[in-house]
Each structure stands twice: as structure tokens, then as C-alpha cells.
Length: 627
Image 1 (cartoon, helix red, strand yellow):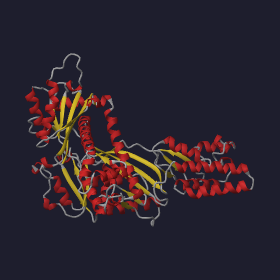
Image 2 (cartoon, one colour; image 1 turned 60 degrees about the vertical axis):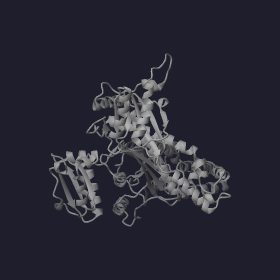
Image 3 (cartoon, rainbow, N blue to C red; image 1 turned 135 degrees about the horizontal axis):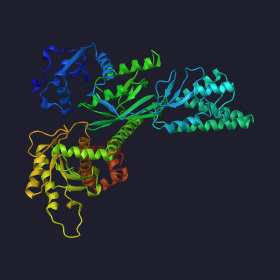
Image 4 (cartoon, rainbow, N blue to C red; image 1 turned 90 degrees about the vertical axis):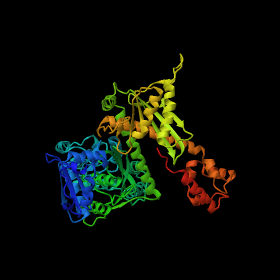
């Protein structure tokens, strides 16, 4: 099978040094750029038997006509060269960043003689210093409106400034005190530039200095009975406090960090980035990436970090991640050099990649990861909620598996169990491509030999209602025949489902979706149906399968939670009273399961040995369900 790729180079010709490789098509277009510590080990993995490759990797190598490589001296040089080539060639099979919109920034043109402040999505304003990005334009405009009280920097365009200077008439903002009006000489250019630098310092995180100074000036003016000036300082102090309160303190006040969270499935991943400056969240950025090849989590982290700092974004000294990429030292060096170059400070603090393990940093990381998960759900829902997209997806499913009409009602089944016990199943229903949750069903199975047997049992119970002729007036969602059955699994599961349908005389098409390769299997098929990776049809099938999986896992966990008292009392030496005391002390099952050994032993009557036994039992009970 490997010999089908005619361009495969002899293994002995591929060097073992670090380097960067490129796959090219017959026209010389670069399809994929990658780096490797050992070029031979990495490239030979692409020339394994085609059937063993991930389907997206298989598409790439079969689309290619040649592969070239460049040897470098170190991993760091490989990372730099890979980064340069990805930017230059934009290879279609590398991680593709989608839904990446331009975010609003607060820009201050500190390099100008008369600086101005502006809210913009452009990143190429000459001599400007940027703060952000921010998620909402209205939010930064609201903050800027408050900041112009204590920092009256001009916001007008150069043409408006020139006209005011020529006519010696300030604009409305100058009249109401929201601009220092250098255009008419109320302040000198140097004084105005000083105000602009103070605003930049405040936006950079130096909040305490300005609020303290403003408070002292207010008190001095009040003591001198200059109440009008004191009132002005009071209003400015309120404005500074309000803006500072919009960014809650999340870490120590001297910490600058970029915090990244990720959520992914087999087709796409979402990213959340929190910019923490001076212990406050100064900006939030979110985007979606399209994972074309079967990238590992480490490779995905690596790609996303480099993409995040591609457009002159200055990395913070600390970058907090859910996990470190394999080439973290090289990435540290690249980010450090980039930071020092953009700051024009050769001795600026080095960048350090880290994984938060505990404390406030860990809680913030968990929040960012949670937001990434929510973003992934919203991204999927946006795609599903578009009517034309759903219609096209259903038509593509019809064509792919040879249906006579689009499957307007689809039912999907998934099995979940805990190491062979607590076997449950789910049935989710999608009509016109949207979930019909009122028609969802749960199944509890007393026993099953394996997933195939469990699937056969569930389908038998389901089709019994289709074989049943409802009496007049009877209404049951179970009696509605779907246009398509989907089972979670490969050929064995779909064959078992088809056997049940044939036995009951039910003529409804059924397909299985294999988890790893996202392939559709038809009953008795020798080869799977492979939907295009970027197709809405594959997205819809995957979304339906994921919903069935979620529903099954939720039901399985609910059953286990109901049995928590039984689990506790199974611990030797822990009776009903002590079990009740534990639940009463922690207030919820979730808090109890999250407790450590020391926390458990702090409960009256729970010895350290008993606490350890309870902890181990609860962790065993929390083993992930298989679905």
C-alpha cells in the first residue's frame, strides 16, 4: 500500500537531523508545512500503509506529488522556518484559522507631536501604541468616554484638528472638558503629550498610582476650600475607579500573562485568550480553528500560540496553557525574541510557558477553558441554525448514502457504561437538522455481552413501537418512523442494528459513524463512506452523534449520583451515620467528590485511614464512562 505513493523518497535518503518539510502538489503548490526533530522518523510516518492513516492525512499525501525538506541546526531554527513558510505559502492542510474577526483596540499615537486616542480595528496606524483587543466596541468606547475626564486626550482626526487650529475654535469635546484642546493653545504640545502618556500608563496597568494621586489632590483641594476643583477631582476619581472595576483583579497585581484555553472535537477547535496586565483582564480574544490533519493536542497548542502572536502582538512574560507543547523550549525562545524585538528592549523579560496547577492562576485557566467550551457549542449551534446550511447538509447525506429522499427525521443511538457496568443508552432525535429534545429517550440495560449486543437490545426496544399499530387517537413520538437511524460505532454495530430491523420487517436505512476517523458505515459494506471533511453533512452527522453521546453520559452519571450513598456505605468502617455526616458537611455530592484526604479527615468521626479509603472509592467511582 505504501508503494502507491510514487514520490516516496528512499528512507535512507531522508536525514535524521531537525528540519522543515513541505508536501507539494503536481503544480508545485505547497499543501502542508511541518517541522520535525528527526526528519526521517517524521516523514516515514506519512508513508505508512494508506489504510492505517487518518483519513485527513491520507487525503493530503494522496493529493501530493512531491515532498522536500530543509535541514536546520536546531529545533528553534526549525520552528522559525516553519512559521515563516506557513505565513508565506498559506498551506491548505495546515491548521486553518476560521471565524477570526478583527477585534477593536484602543490606540494612542504616542509617536505624534500631538497624540490622539482612537478606537480602531486597524493594526497599522503609524507611531501608535495599542491596548486590547477587546470583545465589544461599545465597551471600550464606554470606558474611553469615562477616561477622557481625567485624561483629556484629543480624539479628533488630523483634518478636524487642523481646522480647529486654523479657526482658533475648539470642538464640543474641548468645550465640555473632554479634550485639553491643544488646537487652540489651552495646553502646550508637551503638556498634551504628557497627558497621553499618563493615559497609556493607566491602560498598561498602573491604576493604583493615578487613583492615589487623584485622591490626594481631591483632599488637598477640599482642605483649601477649593470645592469646585475638589469636585472635579472627585469626578475624575470616580471615572478611574469605574474603568478599573470593569477589569476585576484575578491575580497578583504585578503579573502580566496571556492565558489560553482550548476546546476541540474531531473537526474544529476553539480558542480563548485572556490578556492579563497588572493582575487585571485587559482584553479577551476568541477564535475558531479548523483542524485539517490529525493534529495532536501538543501540535495544536504550538500552532495556536504562534498564530496568536503573528500580527505584532506582544507576548506577556508569562503564557499560561492547559498543556505544554513538545517543543516548549524552542517556543519559549521564539516568543522571547519576538517580545524583545517588538518592545525594542533587548533585555526585556524572557517569556515563560507554563501550566497553572493550583491557586488563582488555575481558577482563571479553568474559566478560560470553560469559555472555550461554550464558544465551541455556540459555533456548532450557529452552523446548525442556518436553514440553507441544514437543507444542504440533509441533501448531501441523502446523496452520500443513497437515500430516496432527505432524512428529515434522524434518530441516533449511543451506548454508555462504566467498565462494563451501569449500561445505559440514549436516543436523540433531530428533525430538519435541529434537535427535538421532547422526543429524546433513555434506556437502562440490565446486562449486555458487549456494545454490539447492547445496541441490538436498544434497537429491538425502539422498533417494537414502529411495528406496533397505534389505536385511533394514540399519539406517541416513538411511533414516528425516522428517515434514518444512526448508531455510534463501526461495521459491527451497524450490522447488529440492520439485523434487528430485518427481523422485525422494518425498512428504514441505518448507518454507523466510527469515532476515530469520522467514517460512515453501511450494513455489510466493505468500505466506509467518507464525507468531505469540510462538508456540512459531516458536521451535522458529527453533531448528532455528539449529542447522543452527551445525553447517554449525562444519564449514566445521574444514575451513579443516585447511588452515591450505596457507594459510601460500601467502604469498610463507614456506616450510614458517617456517610450522612460526610454529605451534610460538604453539602453536595460534587463537593464531596472534589474533597481531598485532609478535607475528608476534618469531618468528625472520619479517621485519616477512613478518609483515604473514602477518597480512593470516590475516585474509582468517578472513572470516565465509556460511550
